[in-house]
Length: 424
Image 1 (cartoon, rainbow, N blue to C red):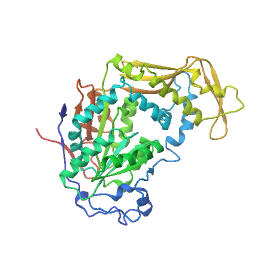
Image 2 (image 1 turned 90 degrees about the horizontal axis):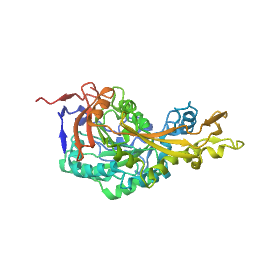
Image 3 (image 1 turned 135 degrees about the vertical axis):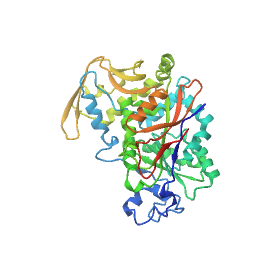
Image 4 (image 1 turned 45 degrees about the horizontal axis):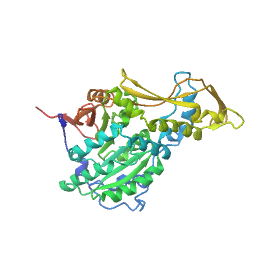
């Protein structure tokens, strides 16, 4: 059932009538080589001569100095050196190729309802969702944490049909799959291209984290382009509410991505404890195996001292147990790894110095959590920092799962786009 809120009147941006050419000399040649999104727009129908001919090439947007991907070893060490009760492992450790395969096995269980419920909701409402995005005059569509692109074909196919029927575009929309896993992006994008045979949408990929994506999209040369973010799978709720608001602010805040058309979020709002616990700790052990993979991944990241007899035991899953729990007050399921005995290991940091990691028996090490947020929660998270306003929502039967369309509110007046509520 679709819920329609007051829609903003978006005045046509001057850029859409301009003769601005993304291949023009106003863009530095070095940037035009890096940003294929500039190749397809209303005013340009042929690729720039500076563009690589291999359109399957992804753009590596990681920053060697600040990207979370490039500092996983430092993050892992730092999080394990925290005092008792505050130790953790970065959840990014779970998203390498093996981790993605283990996660896919969770999706296949009959207990993991979020995947099935969101799929059913998208199938039912996809034409309305696609027409909403199409009407926002989006030029660049970025899917955050795209993974194996399992739901992407459905969305892009419907969106392509909307663009085809409108007949108002002379150029193509560009879709970017943003993910941290290079091999997964390489193996998923070309099959998607073959399955969909899109007429009005070009497919690209971005290698990096959410923060990398926000930074890349904030380049001044991309300011003229209308941008929509897609974030499905309840991925936003892996963060705490404050963290989610802060990350959305990187995209939608006053100093974030300019010319933001909208944000499409998929969020699980189920508060049934028994149902949630079965989903996140399935009887077959799929969730347990996935979370335990963080140990193997951490061991690959950290340089353990070969002279330390206890180092080999630190990341051996036989010395750990998985523990999951539902926190009703915080509306959140959390996953921990717990040492079965006291362990010590000597780790070399990037400066070549050694650090001793000590884990006590029974000490909980946090890995990741999943929040369950109602529509009111989503509104509060998106309005406080990012200044996003809920314009439309679609819900599953029982209203537990929601797909939300949010747009910049009155506080966000950038790039000549004025957002106003419709009059009653």
